[in-house]
Amino acid sequence: MHNGRVLTIGQFSQFTHLSVRTLRRYHDAGLLEPAQVDETSGYRYYTADQIPTAQVIHRLRELDVPIVDVRQILRSPDPAVRGELVADHLRRLEAQLDRTRAAVASLHRLLQPERAQLDVEVRHVPAVTVAAVEGEVGSDDVLDWYAGAMAELDAVVSSPAGSPGGLYDNSLFETGRGHLLVYRATENPPSVGRVHPVTLPPVDLAVATHVGEHDDIDVTYGELGAWVVNNALAVDGPVRETYLVGPRDTSTSTAWRTEIGWPVFNVTP
Image (tube, rainbow, N blue to C red; front, side, top):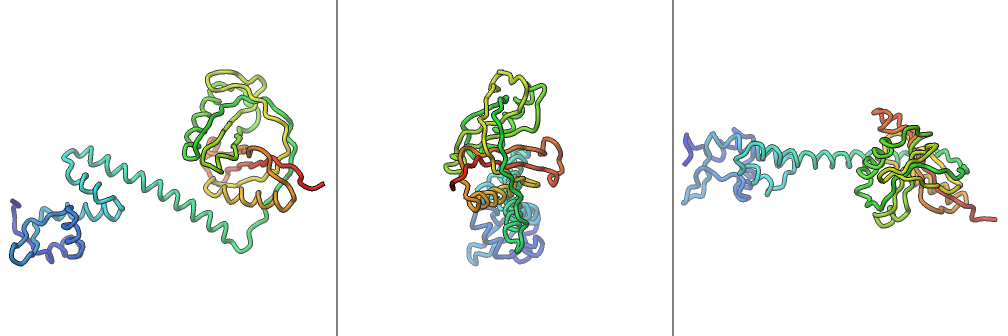
């Protein structure tokens, strides 16, 4: 039994700024039951104390919270539980916004009528022994795995030489899972935990530098791939990335510089 004067659905609509159609939809979905429903006419009536609930539902649905989650939030008597349910959804929304921003940035770059030509260098890199962490990783787990591996390297490599780097097996791009190796060059690579010495073989690399955030690094990959093909070269082996300047160095993303190096060989005499 609700206390207070009942309001017609029209009055309730005016007080909540929700259309009559929306209120009927909330009722049909089991989100907001009217205080009374006239058995003869079917008219719905509400009370003033239902106004905040209606507005909470509206805000949650504006944030695309699924109906089943809205029900759970409304029915939970524990404010902490309600808060955590909302926070979970907001985290999902923020991740979705990040993906949307990344896609928009990539599209702007791809659709520029006159894009700057990529500066590519073919460079011979001699063999080098480094301190490395390696493993089989799924594409969705690369960022977390990389952060953990680099933290281990930072903890045990006391005198790194040069910028950190990584080798990314082709199967990571082809099947979504592949071999990853991240490393720091150092004079005496240690063997501690997952960190161990690895000798990287000599290689000829087609190298280009990706500038800025990594959201559109795939565009640079594509431009470098086109350059390789157009210069009668073939890709041979895992791609190498070198992190000249990155989030570990500065929070200013426009200053980030990532070298992409594809092992190549000449396909013409």
